[in-house]
Amino acid sequence: MKVGRFQDIEIHFNLLFLLLLGLYFVAGVLEKGLIIFALVLFHELAHTLVARIMEVRVSDIELLPFGGVARVGYEISAEPHREIAVALAGPVSNLLLIGMALGLKNYGLWSEEYGPFFVQTNLLLATFNLLPALPLDGGRILRSLLAIHIGVSRATLVAARMGQVIAVAVACLGVIGFANRLSGLDVVIIALFVFYSASKEKGLVPYLFVQHLAQKKEELSRNGVLPAEQLVAKEDVPIKEIVKLFVPQKYHLILLLNDKMEYLGQLSEAQVVDALFAYGMNYPLGKLIHPTK
Image 1 (cartoon, helix red, strand yellow):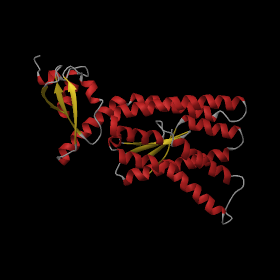
Image 2: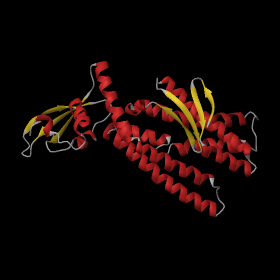
Image 3: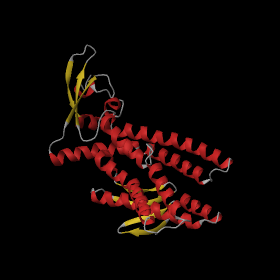
Image 4: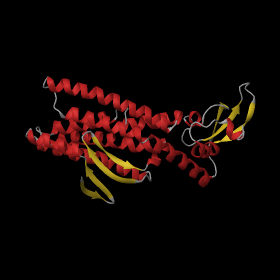
């Protein structure tokens, strides 16, 4: 549900966030729900500000029970340093708010009713979002670090699966906590949404992969140079096995060998990518050198 705009960026409420506010209203603590809303919005605006500074496109912001999502261009996933900077902005903003609140307390500007809740909520948002699991900020940092070594697609799958595992664990703890009156249903709602969002991230892997390859070709055409990474493969290896090893910001050259480990020739990343779209993921690399074979 659209609730407003910040500059040219639309801000949306997720329905589960409204449900969470409804639970606070029923419990008679709507003021605390509004504090959560303000802190989540601040968290996402911090992401947006850093994204703008890093010249990353931001389309809209969706406020979620566990934080939110500032939807940035998928091209950021191919540039780990920018994705890490944007991801860290949210948790860092919450830590800064904690420092500000504790500083104001020293000057007598403090509410015994809402001050501790303000600090605890900021701390929870920062620590929860730093968990190494998509769609959380920590998951985006994990993906960026892994992508350098195993490529964007595999890194996204690993981080999304971590998200599903952590969501299930939090949901189970939430049910136990609710049964023992140690926590409310909000914990379970947040966990279910994290699981849903992590599953959605997994579904975006093919799109991310294609976007990443296309962007790298554009970058090479624009700059004229990229660092090279050399790979070695046997001629019967399908294309899907070699593209799994493609990593961001490097251009790959593949040396092909036969069963006797004899050199057959060399393929460029562009040749492999073109063949991927022309012949499919299971096409053998050797046929790109010997097309009639």
